[in-house]
Amino acid sequence: MVDPWAAVGSVIDVRTAARARGPVDGGTGDGAGGRSAGSSVSASGVPPRTGREARHPLTGGRRVADVVATVVLLVVLALEALAAGWAIRLLSLQFSSCAAPGNSCNAALGGAVVSVGPVLGGVVLVLALVVALSRMVRRRLAWPIPVVGITAVVVVFFACRLLVDAAITRGI
Image (cartoon, rainbow, N blue to C red; front, top):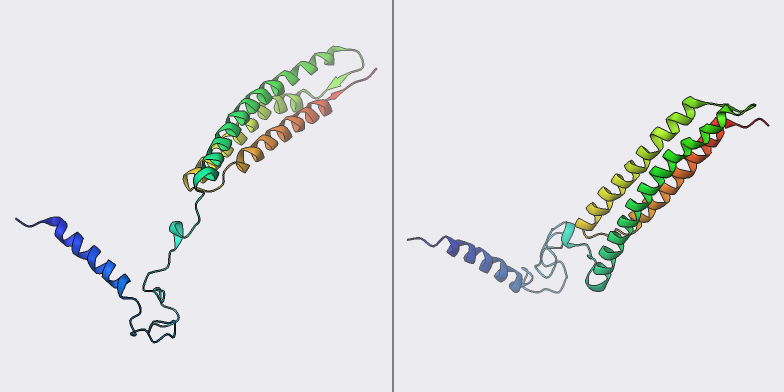
């Protein structure tokens, strides 16, 4: 019977031996190791680290702090988006003053703002969730993303409030 793991062990041994040998040129001391300048192997015989391995991932306490801060800020963002959505819907109560003498209202603008505003808050929430979680998976700093989302929800709320106020003209 043939052992399938024997081939794997021999490949690992060859790679380890190639790293342990060092420069190919016998150690001339030129630093190039007998290779051209465009070679993908360094002078020590170890291939350079590229891609995901080359990054300095957040480690230890910094990584834990980033994950905790990101999760807490995402929860705050979700609660804020929910509260802002309800507050935008409640802005429609301002249209009760349209019946007063001398007041005029742009119901189309107000209705559009009250309908689209909560959707924009939800879009900001989903976007921040997707970007923050993808950065956390790639071990990148992620806590600023929910902060940007929180700021964006505040901007959406105040823009909706300004548009609803612009839709109502008070006479007297």
